[in-house]
Image (cartoon, rainbow, N blue to C red; front, top):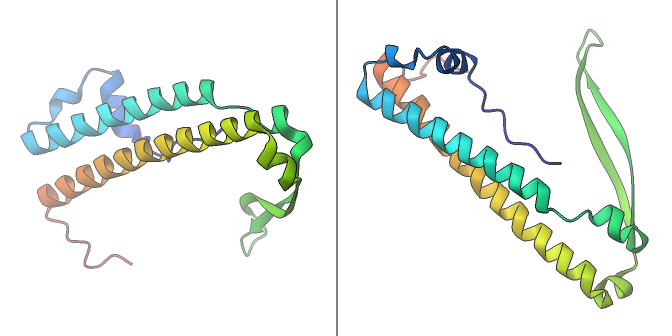
Length: 148
């Protein structure tokens, strides 16, 4: 399954769970935070629905294609694992059968639609998080001039 981008803000989640979000008195910050939390919740709810509707292309249509690949890793200078990712090799497809397989084409179109909807939700969360960041920068007077 796909996942949402990292959007956990531990301090905010702690304040939310303890009922102490009211400590913020700046109305711009309060609005940006509320907008972020609502957008994040809606995107996560949508993702749950999307996951339940996504067709299992591999399980239903595995006879039409084969994905060959391997897990690759990135190590830091001290040999600490920093990342793992899937490296895909060429995909073997039976294109003629794919084009003639109406159920596969419908499932593929549905998958694409749901994935686009998922991406739009993530874009909304990213925009709300960026707005929250901008409001905090304005309140704190941080222009990020010294950031690298």
